[in-house]
Length: 225
Image (cartoon, rainbow, N blue to C red; front, side):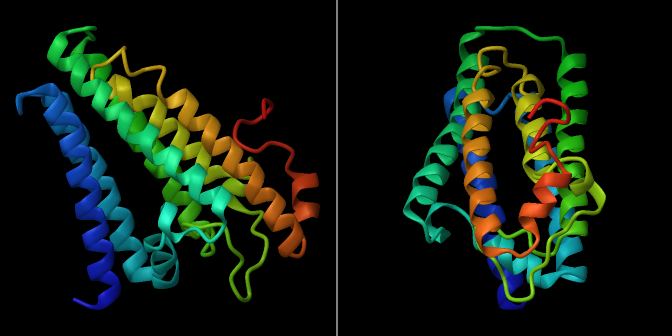
């Protein structure tokens, strides 16, 4: 196993460990079938994307391994990423508490349907990775980077964030929690703030990005924003 694959595996293992803790410790039990199904779907999609990148775009995989608050070079982005990380984990903690204290009750069918939207969100992210090899985990411009305006980038400027938003919005329902349902909203707002900052950086540092923004009007949601 080479160093890049090892780093990707360790990052994946750490993320799954954190998600499992955030779900099962607040739930107070391992008998939380929605959590097991969600983690299986999340892990399966993440592994599939990672395997694809390992085979077809190792440069992008290396860029994705370097992510999170510590990897950011701008202090403002370190703060944004830190807040996003806290809000992300909070979604799972509240869902676990909801399961323990029975704050809400959802049909198992609804949770399974929501899992389909989690997969759809991952699929959007995969399409972005397949289209754009410069989708780094930090805000930066790589040597030789060009503006990508094909595929999902024809619809919105930040299709990866759009796909992640679908995943986040579906997560509380997939976990059977109405109490956690409002929590992805502030997280998506933080993502929107990051998207604005990313656009400012790319406009100043990537040739042709300003023209691309004029052609593609919407950032996350077509005909809305």
